[in-house]
Each structure stands twice: as C-alpha cells, then as structure tokens.
Length: 229
Image (cartoon, rainbow, N blue to C red; front, side, top):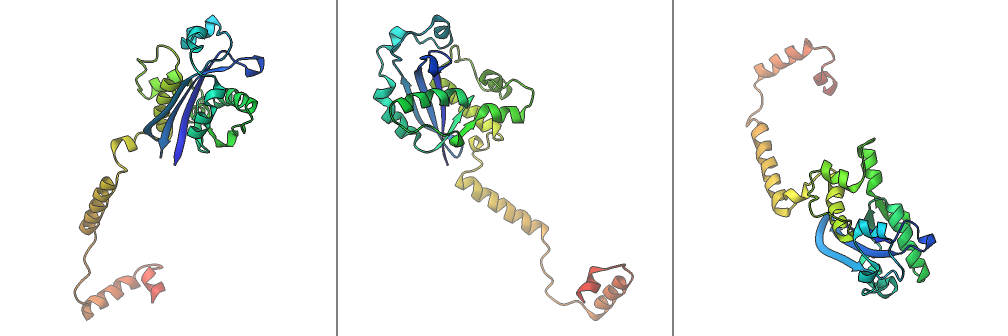
C-alpha cells in the first residue's frame, strides 16, 4: 500500500487572503514504511513573506524568488502523489492551500476522503494530550534535535515516524515482517506444535480400558461422550 506523508510551509494562514505555499515536502511510504523516495521543493510565492512567518520557517522572499512557482512544478507534484493516500498533520490547513493552487491551474482538488489526518489519530489515541508534532515526537522518543525551524521535508520525515507509532509501533523497523523472519516464525510454531501435541497411539484401547472409560463416563453429568454415542 503506497501512502504519501506530506507537509507544506506557507506565507500565512489563509489562501483566500492571498497567502501562498512556499515549500512542499513529501515522503513515500510502502506498507507504512519509508521507501527512501521523497519530493522536496521550494516555491516562489510571487509576493512578500511576513517577518513573523519567516521566524517560523526561515524562508525569505529573497531566497524564494530564485525558485520556481507552483505552476512550474505542478506536474511533478501531481505525478508524485498520484492517487494514493495522503498522510498530513492538521490536514485541513495543507489541503486548503494545495487546492487553492491546484484549482487556479485547472487541476482537480484533493478530496479529503483520501487524506489521513494524524492530528485526529493522535487525539483519538491520546485524548486530552497535546497533538502537535513536537509533542508527539517527544512522546515517542523521536529525535527533534534537527528541528530548529519548521521545514516541509523534515517535518514529513518526522511525521512518517509519528504515523508509524500511532498505528501501533515499529514492528516493520525491527524486521519482523520479512520473508526470512516469517519462515523462522513458521518453523518455531511447527516445532512448538510437535512438542505439545501427543502422537496418536499405535493400537486401539484394550477391552478393559474401554470398560473403565465407560464406567467413568457413566458417573459424569451431561458428558460429551454420551452425546456422541
């Protein structure tokens, strides 16, 4: 199963007020495990970036002016995410910005039915606890030392680890689901079954043994042997 963990950075909070995406980061998962394939792009928003926003992600208008616009890389982005499930933290925010860009260029909007919101997963699993990315990384002992600023690719990589933990832990990372390990487990199960299973007797019960068994069953209330007779 292919999934894409996705994050964006923007110039502000509302695309309806002219805010734009300035960075996109994507991490490909197969069966919930990162494959190593990523997509990372800085985007020229063709507008200013407020100082308070630069303080969050460190991306200035001057730096971004040397990068392509969303229109110039939209095909690359759409090809990478395909029709697969998108895993996003606080998904409504990112999808709102992505759809504003996609609709402007005549592309279909991203439907929320293909999106997994990890904020909602975290709130269901840990009701009443903080559900921001930093808090979840600390909860799961995921290294945050490189996150001095928000960054779309780094945050997607961290979110991929958080997502795996929210699903139940790092079994795949421990190598328990490889073909070799499945073969080892099957051999262990077979060996344990042989140890606990009594081999069939090579001969039938003697007449006196059968009589003793019948006498014992006669003393039992509602014995299953009587029902089978």
